Image (cartoon, rainbow, N blue to C red; front, side, top):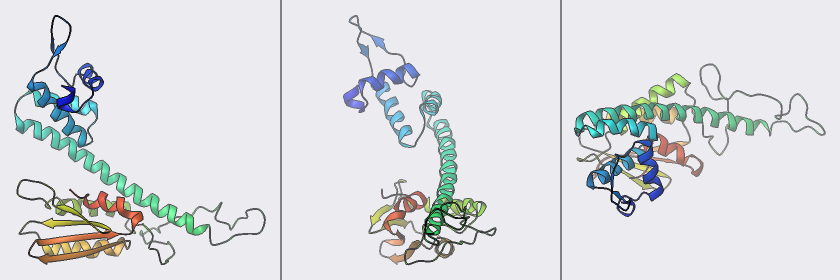
Length: 246
């Protein structure tokens, strides 16, 4: 079973102890007897883990899996994934804010360097805010565009939801992700009927608040595509916002 499932024997025993796997019969010699149903359950466990589900969540989802009906299981799994999307979006907003704060802190360390001990004007002791009350960036401009978003927290959440609704359509007929790696970022390909005007609106809005990103909308024999690029330091942000290559 370990060889066929890809899980170690220790993991299989642990999952059984946690209730993720059904109790199995044993031979007279004490060996567990597993069947294809157990292997199918392990495939589901692996899928749930790939979606970031905890063991507690997987144990709860397994109750729906035991029901033998796909519909209720999909409903439970979708609700779990939706909650994780909301959590990921919140963490993206927090990371963007933290990045802006760190960029500002780094810049402040260059503004005043006193001879001798620190004073009240040096960047070692001054607390700077990267954004004003309206969310306008106060970061200094430089040849390297800072990895920062000028939207306030509420607007960031709304923008993320808009992107999620649009980029979620970047799949083929069987639901596989249509994302490929390109130099400096990722390319998304959309099916026929995508709202190009809405795509262009979001691109323009995003470029206005996240200048470290660059966008290109392409329309050719492949269909409608969106290419998103950034410098090396922001690759994780690109993949968090738009998904990584399939």
